[in-house]
Length: 465
Image 1: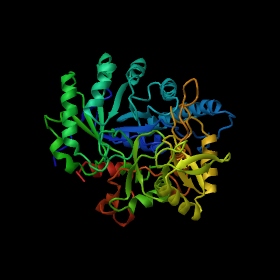
Image 2: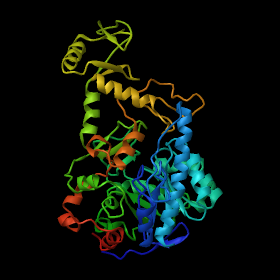
Image 3: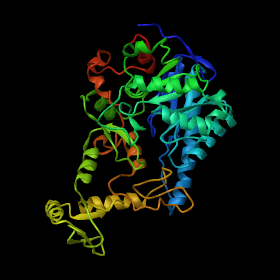
């Protein structure tokens, strides 16, 4: 394989190897700092980051506010405090080598406030910010204020063009790179558009070449594209190196660093990753963000699939074939369904799924009374972790609501991501992972249950495997 040459990123010469910043408490200062210490770019997650006390113990994020708005303010405060802490740990762990980035989801609650709070409290410790899950127009302005580099995450040339035209052309000197996150291969939330088929993946080469063309037209020939999603062995990407259609390129690893000694995820999660088979990661749209995302198939996801399968259309009045009435909710309000759907509903009710819940799309789903109570409790306990949440109907706007009915087909993403990261039953929580995670089981590097350090993993990656 061709030798990897260093690349200029965030004002430093670094290896073109980046650790992706993953979700709630999954990429920490320890893991990202260790990656940066190897000479690459470490990225810690600025999404509800953990804080620790003077003895190194994790500080649980407990919410005391009586209203969603009060809990939202607590969440922002937790996020800023945790992000500053993780930046400090990353800087110390890296020993000043490589570069440290912070990853922010633009659609998370209080994203701008959390990002500015972290950058204000960790001045000089962070060299760049990556940002996706939305259209982060203002991230360039924020980066410029703190004189750091910004790295938007996109899944198409079209998305980049929109960002460039509206905002980024004003601050081209700090555009450190553009992350292309493959929507069919990457773990976590991704940018699959409504015009793209989740079941028909497109190879990344042509899409990245199109992105490079758009960047070149904007005068960004020397700005690297960062390939994210599906990157495992670099030998499989050798034709991307020194390729004028791709231009300067770096590679982001999200899933492989999860199975390292420095990775903070629970041992049960690591063992599950090591035992996955092809097809064990599901691309789904249950997230309350409204985005597609990819996670390990388990009973948690299975229940969401089944919940949506137990779904029928209703009308408020008897219209057309909707002639059969049903009582919904504690008031027993009548709605109308077709005879065929009434028969299906009766079958679900006989199996114990006796509580119908309305969705914003004029449908009913059928769940057990216990599940209905759990859903309601999670909706009421919302702490505003997203800028707008379909599950609870929270919005950080002045009204505090999306204006739509809360959607019981979704789930509280803050609760489950905190649970899975901190040792709860992984089979009953959401486990994000990229679609190549099944390769842990067949890659000889991980034979006999071997779990490498970050340094050993990077050394291995540099061999091409």
